[in-house]
Image (cartoon, rainbow, N blue to C red; front, side, top):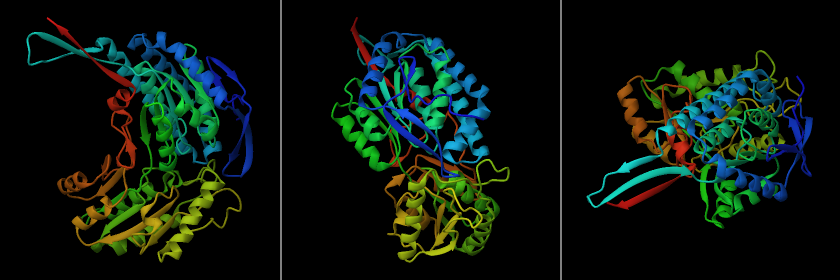
Length: 482
């Protein structure tokens, strides 16, 4: 296949155009230049916000059924180009084709789900409110918040976009999307599908570019009512500070340092599979990576033996290799960052069980072996900080209370996993964990119907489900004297 469909990194007011900023796009599996995308700057952001502002008056007054039809058209367009989107994902991001397929299916499901919620809005925006007085009547309505800026990361291109864009459009908002400058190609392909969906011009706008050139002016534009950002905590702070200058709404999906708890009655084979998936899927480049594995004392030795054997058997390869199980890290900067964490972990006294470097059969590409540490000091960055690479830390615990305390001892609180045969006990442990989503004896399945987000410094607000829609709505009460 050839790609991309366009090298123009600006889609503004229904028209493609080329900006003055040149973004080099690299294939992480080969380190070769894929292409150059012509992205934008502050001037392009101004044009995009102007177009979105002009389109809002009409789009915000469309019916839910009209908006739902557009969302279904986008879902159908994604389905029709599924193979191509998978190809672009793997080429630009480095993830295996089977993972890219999961991503594309998630995008389809998300747009279809919010199409249904949009349809349901035609039942009426207003709801009556019971009051303690017979002299007044009150109603509450939810209205679109206005023009919204969406800033998305590189680890799940199109997926994080769908999680934000679908509810924003369903709510009646107009959008300016800033993709990651590292992985703009999947978003350009998705934008081309959106351009063919029948969406009125100006409702959806895309500006490729860097955080400094595009993200900062978008966050600070006073005409933007809401910023929804997914990315690192450091950049999230900058987005929030810039947004505060004009007192706008902010949703943040940030980092994680999540735990998987293997209880004393756990099925070891299941625990190993879930630990491997939680740490090595997408080469560990997930905010939900369960990179801290806590294992009951009586199972710890055998669990570590089996997990090590599993990690050493994982085939790290080009994303288009038919037998690939784990692909490349996204770029050189991320590759070096993860290697730096490994080196510092060793210097801090952690014991390397397996992995830690490049696979011997891969001389180029940003490939890293699945890596396992034990005896990691609790104050080590390896234990405390988000690594965003295929690195697991395994620690024993004597009691469930100790395991819960270790899991909750973090500035993050995004997700957690519990593995245990006694479901009631596993549910009790799950309830004690400070996390926005907990899986019990299950892989990291995510559904559009359930919320995504976490406690502490992991999130501000929630995505997906009805909560994702409400994130792009304002609440208005009307009280009338009788």
